[in-house]
Length: 300
Image (cartoon, rainbow, N blue to C red; front, top):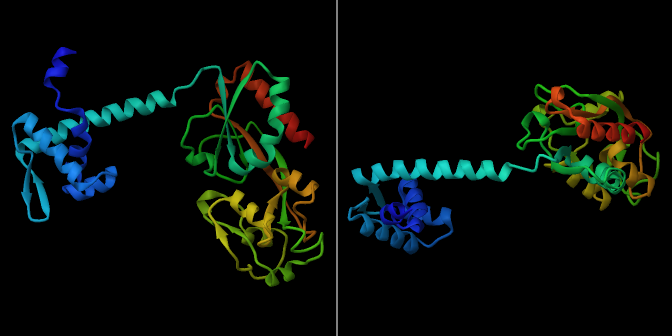
């Protein structure tokens, strides 16, 4: 420890130096670190004074690393990267008693959260942690034990433990249209709410739905949003007609906050699917969560 204290340069100088070396600009380094250019310059000058070496050649509107600067830049970048990786690993660690359920964001908001109090009451010994995401499982960015997502979306190499059917149909605020008051042809007269249509995302689009119910009408134009809960919020505010998944929006429909302006519906045999990240390692507690999800989904 004494050697480190004696030998290490001032630690506050390392991030400004790394950024300036990588970007070859004090100004850009300052912007990246939310510092002033003068503050970055002072930190690098302090580092040079500590080492007794020039690390940069100052040129007109540019800085270039010296040979000593290049050597230090490699060492600092490697060291900071090692520390960053270690910190990320530590942050991602969790208590082994936690069961992480990764749920599609709209499913978490509209289907899962209302049921969690009953889950905790009936399973007081289980620690369920819910992570919500708009990304399909094929692009999951966090570790999980179990997952719940629309069965039409990609899941990578995972196969569902089980799936339950769902139905998709247009929904809107009752201020927009009445129950079963429209036909597909009438949609052209209304604002239509779209979720970003990315074929790799596996999200059902209006094109898919119209084709699925056999409606030979052009896809209506309207606002496009990058995630489904925002689409539903827009529909709740009376801004247009959206596609609704019955299981996820059941409560909003039952309470009259949303209505079905069209009778047509597209049935999905694999509407909602439950997955395990490690099917070969499902212990008793994870199985209890799986069984609870199944009971809720089958009874829904």
